[in-house]
Image 1 (tube, rainbow, N blue to C red):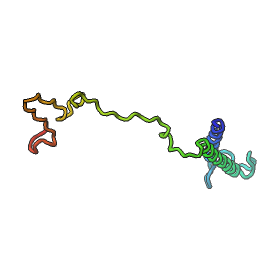
Image 2: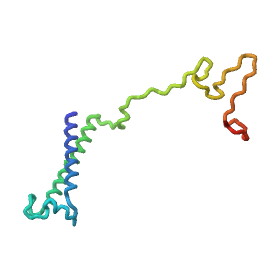
Image 3: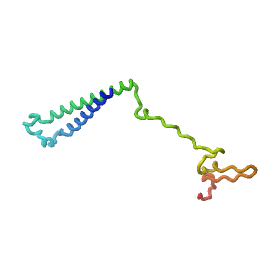
Image 4: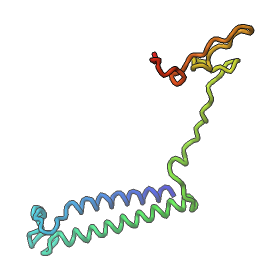
Length: 146
């Protein structure tokens, strides 16, 4: 199945490159750039009608091949997934471990630098507790934060 998929992808890429080349070589109505390639000569390689008819037919054939290859790729992919539609690349990604809460010490205080009033050490029994540090939201309106 993988060999057929690769073959159809190669055909699709070649036909896409052919379409690009053929469209760039064609000249539009009133554009005389095609004369540089001999389209104005009656005895040219493509006959008296010039290269425009040959190039337009070739572009149509390349477009039909490209369209057919696209349909074939869609069919192969659908059959490979047994008719189920997948959400994309992220559905196949490995799940990540959930984020863990920060480790806490024996008194329920987070380890690491002080995290505000909750991280202040508890006062020994029988002594008054130290006042907690004021956060900017708790500071009086006339004070300047440091």
